[in-house]
Amino acid sequence: MSDELNAVDAGGGATAGERLRQGRLAAGLELSDVATRTRIPLRHLEALESDDYGALPSPTYSTGFAKAYARAVGVDEVAIAADVRRAISLGGRERHEYVAFEPADPARTPPRLLAWTAAIIAVLLLVGYGVWRNLSLPTDAPPAAEVAAADPAADVAPAPAPAPQPQPPAGGQVVLTANDSVWLRVSDAAGGRLFERELSAGERYEVPADANGPRILTGRPQALTVTVGGREVAPLGPADRTVSNLPIDAASLTARATAAPGS
Image 1 (cartoon, rainbow, N blue to C red):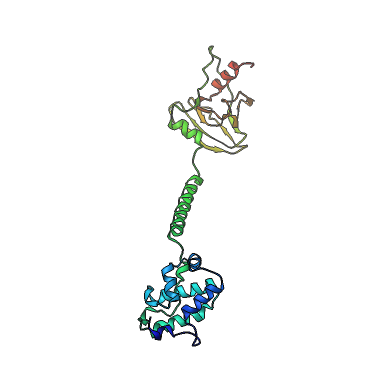
Image 2 (cartoon, one colour):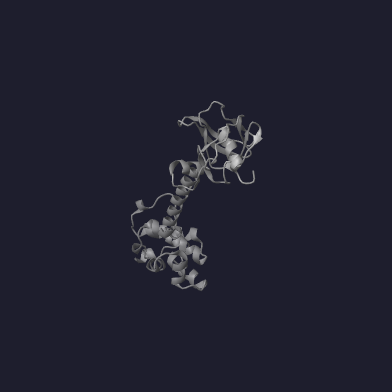
């Protein structure tokens, strides 16, 4: 640097670079320690101590590096920055590179790995929200019933075989009463849908007396109490095992009750 540039300082004494060096030595630090603290390249710190601002990328970086260096060694960063700007101006470097506001300190710029990590975390949060949103949407039917309807090979309890001996037709109204929330579908022998929805605990459904071969599909037979003519009959199947195409006319339910062990 020229003698004119090296002579610039805040009070006519030491230059900005000399004051930075004195501050570092007073703090008992090596130049490599300052580089570690500020993350400024060692060659740029050497240029600052030598007042060699021509070796730095631009006046803006020179000022930012000098302020970061000053903070690291406990020197007045405002005074150092003013001296550096004055020295650069008198040294003939282009003044249009300097902007009115102070740029972000290069020493505080987050590393590239941190920026990538933040971007990845943001993407994962968005994906997680999408999965949660899909899982939280209501469905029209419980999973067990959907599996049974879509996959004939699913774990579905077979309908009990009819009694070996024909029973006389039994009369009486067939009533299905929910003792817990339960979804069910009732169809006739031709496949026509008579009833399909979820019953809440305490709700009941009366099977039409003139229904042609009514049959039921449900995934929670234990949640239904079945009566014929006001008398409770055996459950439609094991707990949490889907029953499909099970006859629920009065005669069939009475026959099942008669054929059940211990009845």
